[in-house]
Length: 100
Image (cartoon, rainbow, N blue to C red; front, side, top):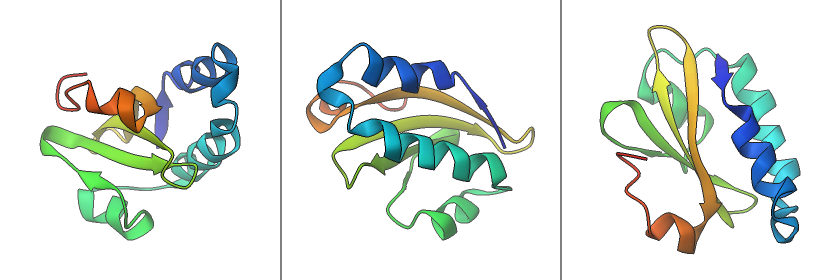
């Protein structure tokens, strides 16, 4: 898989030092998905049982022991993951994961 906008992940903890504990888990997620070959949502669930599959290719991952949420849009046909949001649960509750 290709990951678009990994800079969104880095900006999250670099611009907010209180979230620096997200770095290791987010980068581990990133390294894992680079090697993944997800063709359908079930492939994602196979690798990440706690991932929430939403409509239209959206997926929500729990990062850093469920401390943070990562929202992505996956284009399975082109093997591309677009990072749309990373934040705390409180920040996640303020967004619409389908439109962010």
